[in-house]
Length: 224
Image 1 (cartoon, rainbow, N blue to C red):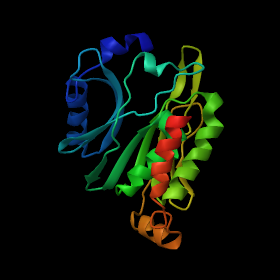
Image 2: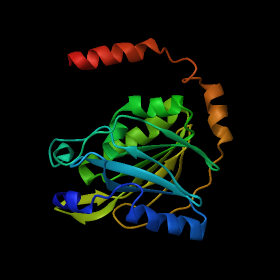
Image 3: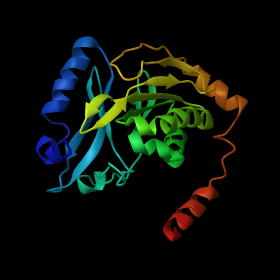
Image 4: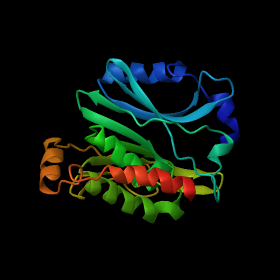
């Protein structure tokens, strides 16, 4: 599959986005999906999450953190993104992340600071990573007082078994719904976005953040 990335990549908007836009219009849905994005720069491909709604394309996020270790070799195919946009929709303000991004709390924090109430993380996590992602889902939701929807692939490809287990976590860390492990599943979930404000008033992690830490983080990461 990875070797097909260059053949499958499309611009955004493009044919695949238009097909999903049609579904969103017909069913009055907001849909998040992933695809290899062909950029305007020849030969540059991004691993991109796309958000569409009943009115069409809302926005996209290009994956910033590209794993290149063990079975992963994303930097062989993709160029990292540089921005963490959030999107205002009738459903609320939505941020997007992709899989390995969840290992990095700075990204989720940045989107929360930009106003995200719900962050959707699309993922293709194999079974060996399950305990990491299950912990990160709780942590990212609670430390930012947001809803986090984690949507994981299920099935087997190239010897990797993807464990499913998609879930929605509330700002207080409650798992509101969870899909089954290792088989395809679907679970609807209703969320109360007012809970974001209540959670941030109860434990004001966003208000109490000391922003100078980001400057130190930037300096130290260059030294690492």
